[in-house]
Image 1: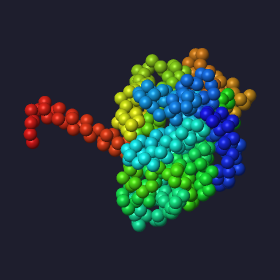
Image 2: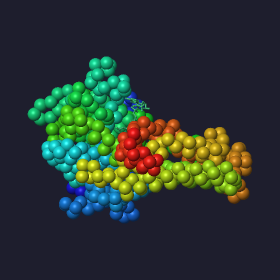
Image 3: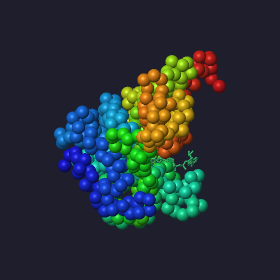
Image 4: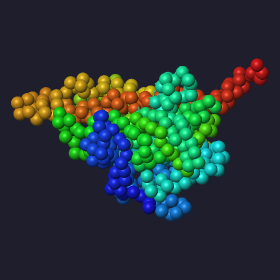
Length: 478
Ligand SMILES: Cc1cc2nc3c(=O)[nH]c(=O)nc-3n(C[C@H](O)[C@H](O)[C@H](O)COP(=O)(O)OP(=O)(O)OC[C@H]3O[C@@H](n4cnc5c(N)ncnc54)[C@H](O)[C@@H]3O)c2cc1C
């Protein structure tokens, strides 16, 4: 089949899936007033594959079949492949007005983690199923969401703990027969699942023997019987109070996915009871996906620098010492993220026979972006000034009685119009939405998840450094 066109992708979503939005069942996600904006955002991946300008980045030749496939479904062989994938995600986010399409990247991360884990287990049946599924994605160019985050109930208790309010806070196997398994539970915050073809489900934590029914990974089409999605609302229109902008809004919704006794055939099951391998699967997904996160955050870090520079210039303060310092802080923030994201491709690790971005550097990149994001917003807010929240609207600007006053009094330094300043404030307000702040903190795992990985992945280095200083101190025994 090969690559899907934008039209084929959209047509493929008219499949009877069960999706709710603002309390109502959605007949067709591609025509729904709000969700069609999200569908268009996800379609950017398919659009880029059709564009001459991006073709070399977005499409590779399948080494086995010699057919064109999405780069996301090409298994990296070396650092150059990892860097190309990184560059594709940065380019897709820039082209998507600061939003990554999420139709291939997260699913590919989960699929690669499944393959790596199957290889680590040495389980021939799982390797065969994972490779077959990989081939299906390559050949049909399907979009895939990754459903990892369970709803969890009491976070401190184990999934199987009888103290949990009920047994279904983590997705688990409730029945099995010679054809497959039946699963029940719910996953939260699953980005783009409402408009992906497939949902790839993996566990979200370590498991013990008692939790073995919760150690389950599988893939299902999004229209599978018993799968119910509840989306959160998105801002899908520009307000009439805003200055018009001549390109589309890009945004995503994230689904609460309910698995109401869903049947999964064995050929689509990749983990079922091997509780010791739940954590390696989670970790390998996290290594890959945090690199995706670090990559798609680069344009937003660049945007913060650009907006601070623009506002400083508009307001005539670009050479003021403390403003320069604040812009310098933002440049350091942006370039540290870029360097860590690139370095993790160069200094890669190999897990289950597949090169993956360096786990320590990748987690540092995501952690750096997330822990410094709010501080970076604060710096831009300081540079921009209070009009960021008190500015009159586009409607005021257009009003013949007051518009001229606004043009006169809200201009910046000589030659900078009030409209330029008001437009930049408008953009900044969008960049600074609470949603983006929470995405920085929680999406791809909260702070502690990264600190934990950085610590455990650095144990060997730490032991070497200790030896080094003991040698320098002349300590030969303790
Ligand atoms: C916009 C957005 C998009 C997302 N997209 C996806 C997606 O596509 N797929 C997906 O699978 N997930 C997705 N996520 C989920 C994301 O990975 C989780 O939000 C994140 O892992 C935190 O989990 P939580 O939201 O349940 O918060 P919680 O787990 O409740 O975390 C809140 C706090 O509790 C702490 N905590 C939790 N459990 C424990 C414990 N046992 N011991 C000690 N401390 C604990 C955490 O460290 C944190 O400080 C998305 C999240 C967001 C916000």
